[in-house]
Image (cartoon, rainbow, N blue to C red; front, side, top):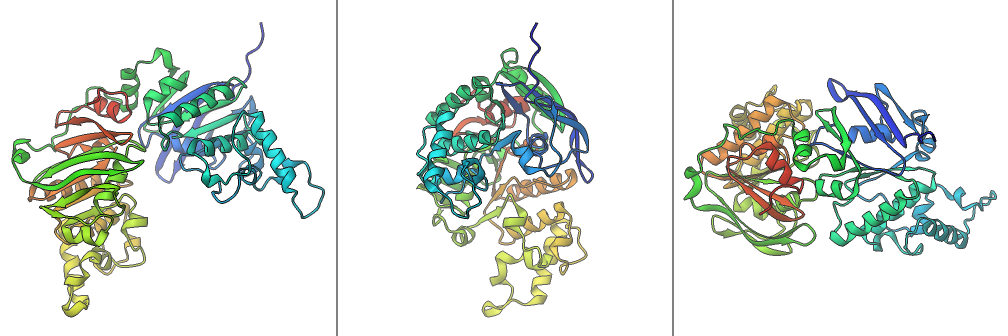
Length: 508
């Protein structure tokens, strides 16, 4: 009886810690040659950390990794890792202004077999070798074309061909369909199946579970940094898969929810009409009433993040309008959105929310400098006084208004961002994943602030895929591929909300 071929990759007992945080707790994964194997789990489950371990970016604290039965290369040996595995990320890694041929052999011109010690590159031979490589994997792309002129899936094909040229027989696909339309997804999947028939293995990571059933033969579920289950996809119902991801199929709504009658008859504070952004979300009519917290739920590429950025003026909509208390907001203008009464809590506090080498007082008052002194001046005493009131109101743990925000904990840094958003007493507060990267206690405090803003007569919008963030909402709209596919009141369960976000729930 012939012996089974060794696994394309086998990871056993992988442990990875970052300080006190356990990112992987003894997880395992096995992908067979020629297999498309799905790895799924909610945010924080450990998927990205495992990818970093499998591609040699992070060294595990414990456990073993083998490729085709051989131990993984030494940590730091980039060329050896490239010969085993490659990852094609959601954001393309090709150099847009270079040609396809140049991208294929970037930093690896010896593959052209004309390296004779000369400093000169034979571009004719480079293009010919690129044609041979692309033809060998059935990729129909002009090697002379600029990468920026290719369709998204064509850029992915180029990245896959480049990886295979190094000898890698395992390709990790991290949200590969996030920027593709339905036809692009089908073309990508057709190519993946063709490469599978040649023995190439794929580890497929996606928030769109229906794609798992379309492409993959096996699925592994991680939850809270641990391995939960591995099974053939055909033996795993969609309900069971979602239940494995959430860990509790009957979780109900939290006590955060306010009775719907409190806001049902209130006047809309924030309203959109036909708001749309091509490639991100379809025309959308929203009404958020005084006293209401609206959730916009969705996984990667659902369009909810782009929608939030349009609401606050960071991106300009392709069509439609936004109103706050009947006043139209100038599209694509952050200052005008602020003046109209929209407050914003960004997702990335370090990149969009804080000036880290400035004080708590300076950061908390960035949006109200016109109120801190006469004739456009900023009085330090008034700045400190204003900041101290926000510190007290939000219970920011700090040595005082003059402390640099870089010295605060993550949760208290986020509270400073919230303070800045609330400084102008907004009519509508838009919070994009407001509790990302904070501890449980700070998370409860921050969500309590959002709830309080609404209870005091404003409108609030939380944009997130974190279930705990969404429990504070009176109403939740689920977006999938740019469309609202489901609407929930206060009675949703973890299972049905996750299923809708992953594209396998009951859609409206």
